[in-house]
Image 1 (cartoon, helix red, strand yellow):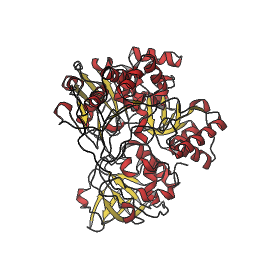
Image 2 (cartoon, one colour):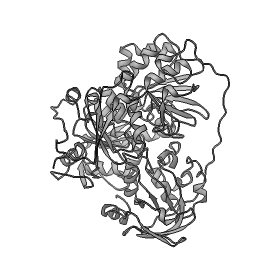
Image 3 (tube, rainbow, N blue to C red):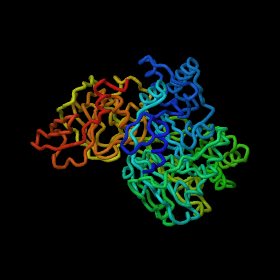
Length: 602
């Protein structure tokens, strides 16, 4: 039986000739990186556990979340990483470089068949060149730096066959937004997705990056593109190596093969709050905007900037609207300068910043304020992710056209006169909860009071918002748990040691931040039970010895908030003692139990 792309890559980096879905294998990591976001915690884990560096030539820092160093805590964290890098001879792609995952492609570090990990939850962007990239928490990264390898569970694979020709005005961003509209945030949860078809073969590198970068928002482990001849040639030129594409076997086994009619795709925009909540932009009512943003790892490439410049050339950004443009890398920035795009941006009244992630991690530019309406090319518009306002997601062409029009529109519908402001809006209030933390025990059978949160896709910004990411001491994390989850802002002050959280699908989607796990440990929450977990969150919880379990159906338990339940981590037996009902959920795997019983990955 043949193997899929992901299976081949994992097998090639393990001690096995063949791997299959659900196999847990130790895989060698070719590129081991940490950012200014999470990097200091990697350093702390290395030092606290008296670890060394397996191979400094494969180990890197990338400073991309706040390349301006405009935040004092980020500046301190960057300096911690620089000092550690000097000590161990580790290369730093510093604040003048740009987004780390793009750098891996530009520098020829990641290419077809390679493996790479970083503290960036969008490391699966490397699927654009046929590489296996994965975002991981700081404990995982530290372990990989010390050992050169890390454990990974082989995912199941799905094959998407795209039929027909791509419509002329459908951008790469429209393609991924149409896929999000069809599959939502969790239908592809935990899968490796392979893309096939003539329309896929014709995609440029920049377009593949745009699509691959939003695999995280779909819940997928990775979106993998079999590399075309042009992609292989690019990677060979950048790496200086002869590269043989790693492709799926003709008899590879997929969980599903799905046909996609790309001729039916429409120009899309994501509504504020969820990338998968999309609508046809032509059916959207005239939405007045305060600001516009072009950039992020999804749309900060040179093709994106060329599209933006073509629309802005000879035009002005609407009065009162702020347009911010952030190239993905310094190489893209310099190319924009050479092509005259920078002058077009400045003449149009846009702000052009140095290369980096921009506002995604509360750094650099791109954040908005309470009541502010933003149209953005970013990958996430979770509440609070890019600020306090509302964020719509769209293609660079739509963002540029909207910046000129003053409201969300398409390039062909830019009016002769922009829509002007008539009134403003005020700031919103925000309450912060408080709670003391207690220690976590390691018993394998627990009993406690339930918090039943009937929500799917609770992301890490809802759990532990990015404005608190400078907190690295677990003792200080508890008070901020769920303070960005509507209806549960007082969770931290009302919870009690020993409580248990039960929730829906895709819990912990989004960022790779370890704090979203550790904040529950700080509150002495005994366990989190969900229908499914975000892939990175699941790893972070297991590695931190935070008990997490999954279920298929718990309706018969008649669970309500305040009930008392009893759960066995070993057998998966669960009992609602308040209702006298019993059931079965998924018990710990052997790997999870081993890590849990020794108190964590280290």
